[in-house]
Image 1 (cartoon, rainbow, N blue to C red):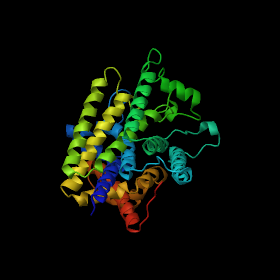
Image 2 (tube, helix red, strand yellow):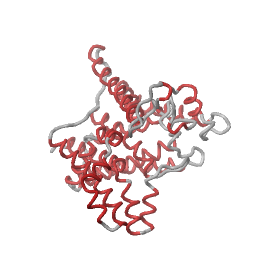
Image 3 (cartoon, helix red, strand yellow):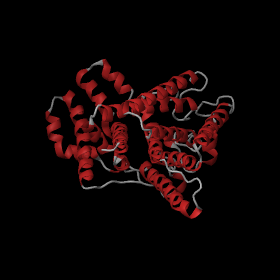
Image 4 (cartoon, rainbow, N blue to C red):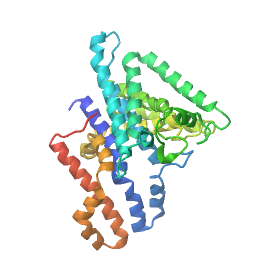
Length: 366
């Protein structure tokens, strides 16, 4: 197997590990707490909740990690449109715009899943979405990577970081509040439709697309590094050291610029880029360095169909199916074990569907 394919397996495995927590993995710790009563599971279960405002939990990492990995894919491809004729560029632009629009549309449909239905009134639709954020961050990072050399990309990233950080931090008397931030003002004046839970601003609002693009852009640079003709351990080691430096810098900045997911502050970018790099280095070391390919393939089943399983979590009632297939068996267990059995059944059902799709060569790619 070539080194590029190995790296892609590690990438798909990490993407699958990331999605694992969204499709039901987050239920395991609460179920284990109910079964055992051990305080350790309470700590882990608390990490499966978003921070209420400032701060950081593991669950806050899931979204930016996915964006980071989308950038890594760009870097691994190492595509450049510099010097290319306009006629040759057009197919790339069409594909990029198509991906952006399709992800944005699917994001809107996802927002109104779970039986709520799409409202008839256009001003009652939530247009901001997780998939739309992924599409926009990927698109901005791709435009920078395709049109600028390495130094130009660094300058673009620096301008984007300083521009976002300064305009956000110098806005008004309470720039990092939910009511008075610049992000709030932009969403209230320019974002159509409704916000998430009718909050003053949307966590996937307009302005923070710019800082989210930094997560993807740093992912691009990580992808460049992974292409280098170095050993797995060298690539993983350097990646881990740079990621650790980013993590430390983010928390050093926290007293001045709070780590905040909804505002997607510059410190949040640094912290999430740091953790993303550490996880990528870890998966590279485990899957490729130690040769744990079976573990990689297990999570890669989720990673290669991540968009499908994410959409399915809103459009299909997996819990109902599990209850239909194994509800009697689950309810026959001791009551403290039922929640854990239901969570494991939920994951097993989705994994089985993904394995069948992979065997049939069915992949939803956008």
